[in-house]
Length: 356
Ligand SMILES: Cc1cc2nc3c(=O)[nH]c(=O)nc-3n(C[C@H](O)[C@H](O)[C@H](O)COP(=O)(O)OP(=O)(O)OC[C@H]3O[C@@H](n4cnc5c(N)ncnc54)[C@H](O)[C@@H]3O)c2cc1C
Image 1: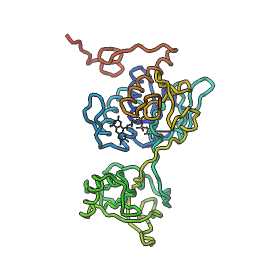
Image 2: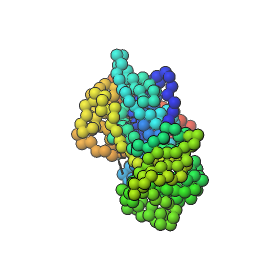
Image 3: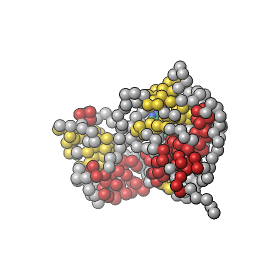
């Protein structure tokens, strides 16, 4: 849920741009070094690509986790950073990053939140995930929750005639999930033609439910929503014969996919190589002091866009931010297994036991 901006700038040891998997682990590594941070993401939820693009697909190359789905990994990362409870500013695009005369960074979001910090960590993946849109008239007049670009909690759709727009996995899978849950009054999917860009297994499940009459399909181009007191009543659209039609619905899900936008990052004066930010691999600092880049957004000789590599980068970046805090002195390496200081930070001090 997007959070309201506070008037005063928030001061923090580090500001992480992005709340994808690498950003979440970054918050953990900063926490172990007693550094507080805030996270900002354009999406209304955490998890970046794992949560948005493949929540139910298995990942097989996380050390020590033989198989874990995208969403499970995100949930585990959230559990891991719980001791540090980093504030998350979701549904907010970072639009400006500026260096002040005193060397601190000032960061602004499009919704008006400001931060002041000595260290900015860019964990922005391929850029901000912004939903693709269609020019549908009247959306602004709807009350919140009547139409949206993300799947809401299933219970908020119970008893409603739901209309989904889209032709990719995201839209078809949502239609399948809602039809199988069986508590919507009706599930309709609309796309301009009866052809889809979905994976074979999703498409097969969709077509089976369609044939069973549990999902309706309408071929059409949306035009405008009709509302009464801000409550959605229907959508008008042009059918394949060019006629304007009306379809009753009380919830509209525009699941047209997301396009990552490098957007403002491209304007921040960073050295970019094929839309990626160049970093020093000892510290993951960019060419600008106090501005770091980890995960899919960075590049260096040998770079691989893998979660494991992002987690390593986040670890070294945290050490560099701690050294920056301590006047250049590298922090002591401590093990989570044996360090009473780390146990205290993790809130597990009472569980420390000696082997004997
Ligand atoms: C289908 C698929 C399968 C994959 N399978 C594997 C696998 O098996 N193993 C593996 O290691 N890797 C896999 N990957 C790659 C892995 O998902 C990425 O390496 C990883 O997600 C990168 O994490 P990240 O945190 O750097 O970026 P992301 O996950 O891309 O998250 C970046 C976040 O930053 C936000 N953001 C960007 N710019 C801004 C801004 N200006 N303001 C606010 N927010 C912003 C975005 O909205 C996004 O949420 C897979 C990827 C895909 C697409």
